[in-house]
Length: 415
Image (cartoon, rainbow, N blue to C red; front, side, top):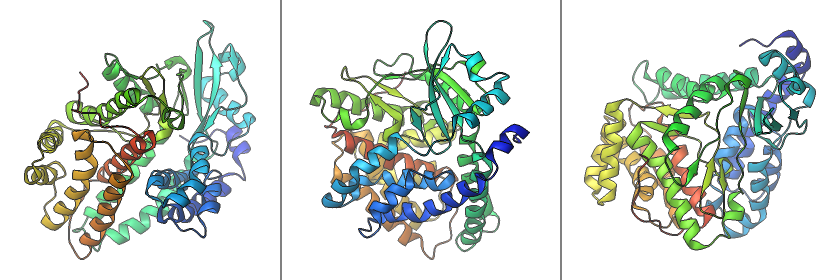
């Protein structure tokens, strides 16, 4: 969608800054991920100021917090927690202009009340509290001005490099298909109408689950750049870590059920399972937020994931490796086995319900690093959704580490 004149005027001069900050994010995020003691604290501070793809990379770097040495984790842990809760914010005038342009009236006319100060901000937008005429508390997510162009520009820069890089490992034409698919996965997060459909899907799926809750969509106050939902209450994972073991066990089971069963039983992947998207409650329930990154799979693919679950549940490694190759359509045996090793620890660990501790997370990230080395010199084709599944597995396991979750037993299913 092209930006109307008023938004363009407000955003002038900010887009270039957003794009440069986003590019800087690639470097600072790498510093976090690699655990560079020299620059990591400064990197974490910078990440909170970023826009675009750099912030997404920063979020992914934050996922491996538990993989850092204990002394370094103690130094940067509070900053990473703050990063999950708060990012750079856009001025209210710019936010109000977008609401007016998309919904036809300023926030003060559309809502009974609308707080000008956002209570949360992320890479693509920020969230404001509001109420409607029935005094319902609402959450209104509005895109940052200019983020569409900044994000697309960053992805094009990364995509150009990716297309060049994949020509060395993928057959003719396949590298472009892979890179364009990955870009499409990120760009989907800019479309709040698509996110609204994803929210409806998960609201229906989780409506009968005793422990998982999603917000409800307010469709007449939503658009491609504005998403209004009911407001969910809960606490961050740092607070939930102090809950009773039985409560954390129940919540760990619910997280595993959400990620694995929605994929295996319903063919939809919740691909943004990082700690900032969960609200924990002392009664053992939890709220789930942010459905911008969701992937849908056909029946054949879903059946492949189902076989992976069955093999993991009975510790049949050979069957699991074969199921991974089929689910991801991998025709290179070396690559298939390398990817299956990451999946065995990441996906299989969630299925089996063991306690997910720091050592387990290190096993996953080490397997991912080894996977990259084993792929060198090979020719192969990867499905574009693979990076998002790997991100999901690392995010989910990292969340369970942050929760200090006990073993949660056999994997349940979403009806």
